[in-house]
Length: 135
Image 1 (cartoon, rainbow, N blue to C red):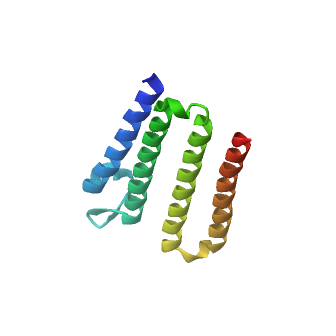
Image 2: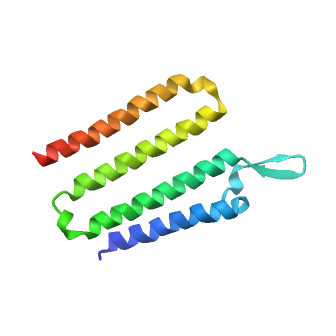
Image 3: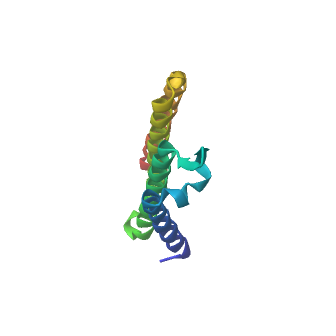
């Protein structure tokens, strides 16, 4: 196993651990996202949920990249698989982010359409990348 795989594994596990730790102790992980009401310090649950999702998806993505890098039979299509994993995870994070934004404020409907078009275009780029690689 080369150095980059070891770094990806450690970073992926740390990211997933941070997501789980943030679920149990949000006062420590999301300390900068707090606001005060009177004497009490409250954290915003939507930002906590978004942080959990991002940490978890990022950790899963890094572990998937490590798996792809460690399988020697996939050496010929390694770049394409890595690119596809990164594009799909980016699209999922974008869509979940805009779902969170729209649940708080309805005036961003136009931005949602733009993000949906961007997401479809990212998936189209990944499909075109596979098409070019297989020719």
